[in-house]
Length: 85
Ligand SMILES: [Zn+2]
Image (cartoon, rainbow, N blue to C red):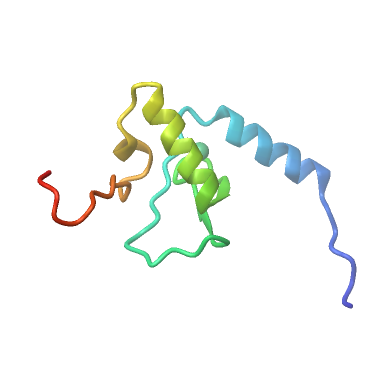
């Protein structure tokens, strides 16, 4: 075991403040492949989220009438092979 990890409360508070002040997160996650545990950073506020959290955010944004590509340019609804689009 190394040294216990230091937690800086002021830094955490600042990070939460920035994330909550972010008008709209934008996750540019690149072409993949994606790992479930990997974290991606919001281009506006720097908040880091895991893939499933980003997925929830995108789906929520979409449910509220937004374009999912605004918050994650790589987001695509996957269509089953062979079906007309
Ligand atoms: Zn953000």
